[in-house]
Length: 113
Figure 1: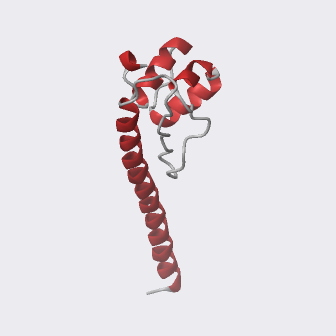
Figure 2 (figure 1 turned 60 degrees about the horizontal axis):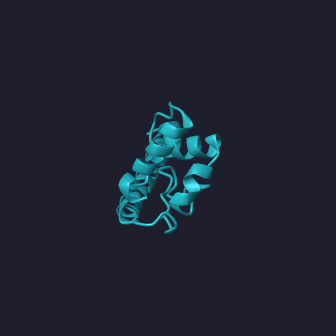
């Protein structure tokens, strides 16, 4: 086998490993997020701390995540959009609608908080 062919195979293996790493991060983040949503669904007071959800890309905590449900209305439109964009593909809608969507996306039960 030619050296160039071997180099191409090694390069493809490296790309496949990078893709697998991305899938692994996504699966870990999904697991963390499911547990966080379950914890958040048991919140009964608006000043209880939220379990932070994680980014699917690298399994790190979502930046600017609200500490409590009371903090959600104070999020800027930009921060609200960034959080929703990380959790779901569509961010269309007004701020009030997106605030309600954030409640659902992070596992809050509307009637509880």
